[in-house]
Image (cartoon, rainbow, N blue to C red; front, top):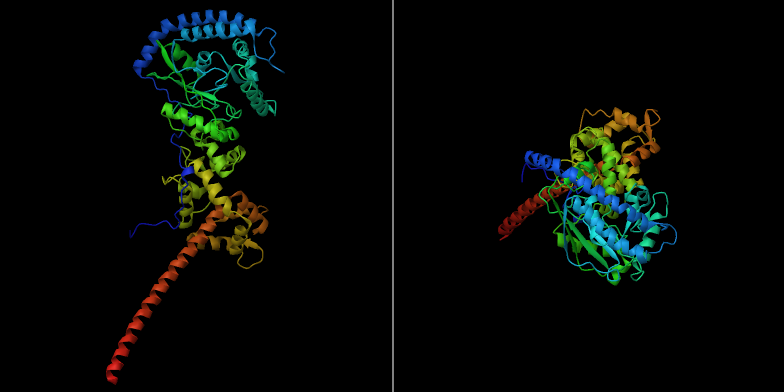
Length: 530
């Protein structure tokens, strides 16, 4: 359409890098109406003291039982499963007291499906993981072994209860802990029913149950059948969801105790048996099990993971909104071959640009301000390449993709040398401020361009001219400029081609006119001859 600016380059968007179905699965916005507040207050006056006394009595019964079960029971070295009276007390008495404890908290547990035996499914995968109350799934599955941090064993009272399930321990101090944990899970899973089942929350962190995030591979590495276990909280008021952005645990516990009852559903799906391909590739097996669980729950899947939570915390420390750090780390790291440290570094660069804007999104004016350049056609084209969803702003996810896919490939030695030669008009292997500002004015189409601050930043030694080493060093740490200049060069080529087409059309028109005139003359001369 005439008058409507057309993009010069239409960058194809990979569907694999489009936005996730759920933007932030780590936020829970608990809003209590006035009626909810009054109801909680009135019920709490009666229920909280009664439940507190009841829970204390149950804990007083659980404590000596757990001490008896774990007496002289080692958790380190060659650990063997409990047998005899210990196992009976663990499976029968502790499970009963655990159910009594959650009953005292007001939980009404609905169990669906049938739990498989240890021989049928050595591993139980529970999802979605959204609360510390998910321990109910451990009770309803008969207190199987879990994966837990070694520090948790030192917790008063509950550390002793945890010892009863003989957890697979993860240590932050041991550099081989991850490998040893997987080996121990595999050893127990392949014991032929000798060990109790191992229960794992494969998401590895709490979400708001709006989707299933990436499953970690630990439960799927052994290549044995896995039984999916679904957990739901179908309550009108959600007082259980405990995730990275939302109410604190103490508030959720108090609100839950103030409810008349809280319903939780635990559903056992049929065991999933891995194919030969899935035995060799735990990631495929994890995806397969997650797909089955997501279909039963009616939820989408996303590629968020615990690393996204770490980026959220880092974003908060950089005074950005926490959700600005969400990038679907699993997908981004796999597709773009980035490690967490690389993405964290890009977050710091993003924060330098976005620190002045609210909402953690960059507008074209802020983008131009960061580059110390005015808004121009070349800059607009670069901004459009970053802005993948076309909303006129760049979020951190778009920034990471843009820098990695667009800028870094453009930021090679050949491009840097070409751009340096463009600036170095007199070919003396250094760029003066006049040469620098002259080309930038031409490139950006701005007559009164002030480049003093940008020139000073590149001129590291303050000598008044930029050497190739200084130029190269700056370009390598600021890949946006490389893409800006390659975009400018492409724009020049495009306009040159457009000009050639116009010249060609004009020439063709002249040729046709001349040909037509010659043809008319030929006809006239023929008539004269006749």
